[in-house]
Image (cartoon, rainbow, N blue to C red; front, side, top):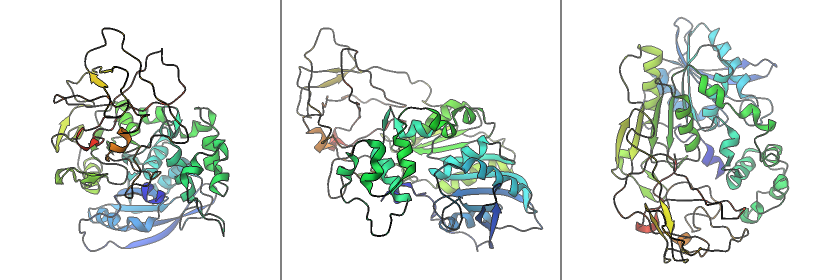
Length: 462
């Protein structure tokens, strides 16, 4: 399950491609002597062409269809298994060597007789992050990036708001390391994830996971995270970047934040109604947003590469393309949030009984004019309100990020549910919640906007 979540969902392009370009498999030497397995498509020593590079922990063979498509478009395509994964030897520790190995690979590409000296990189999730890492090292010849749904600060993504995304990272870590012979993954992740102390979570899982132990032993942004905080480097890069992500993706904040922090007129942001595993598809979670929501991600990347690696980039392009979920249509703007938007406060009201969807809670534009009764609820750490209500279709600790029916959660007594906005209102950008200082609690709070019809989560913070 976890591997499916983190896999590159867009590898298998549906479009037909021309007769396959010849593939060669070679090894590329790194500075410590490790030789990384690498596939080349369309590499002809008698012809120099721009190069497209993917470095992946998810098996280079899985990228063949897209690689052939790109080669047919006039590029040399280089697809490499990262250190310690699939056909490449060495030790695999996520992100640990990606900057240096990316630099060494780009340097090797620049020496080849088929390389025109300009390189683009593409891919999502882990495969997006390795682009930032190689670029931060000043990789030779790197001219354009297409990082989809990824981070520039790994801490900021894992400790969203200061609380670890425990189910996500624990299951991901367990999925990356094969258990010892005779050991099976946990059958009850609910009990496993309640294990304390968190730093010994791998003991509850059943086998050593040093990467996970390190992450959970460092809940603050200290020196442990320094190598995986590329915020400043990403802001300063002088490269055109195409950022793509879905509203419901757990990398949404990071991807949109990268675009906004860079403030580059040469960048593009594409925001669609997707989660991490459904980029370019119409159905996410329990909702089908219709054929307009579909997008050919490989085609979008290919157009971006053509703009910056082949023809001079002179034609205007929309800096932001975003899908309006209320209209089921795409819009464009010159920035994010779109021009003309402003931060608008909404206020919680009740008569002291806001709990559940049958309570008296309201959300309005008017601030309280007088003191209102306090709302109270009891929170049980052993029975937290799940992000996705448990059902046959949605196991309780499955990593599901899209819009789903939240009715079961709205019936829980530990979930205040103020009735939402009744009039038609367009909401863009990031939502935030400010609690008054009079609230004394160490509990993390989460605010979710929902459609009233079937209580479907209708908006993710971007």
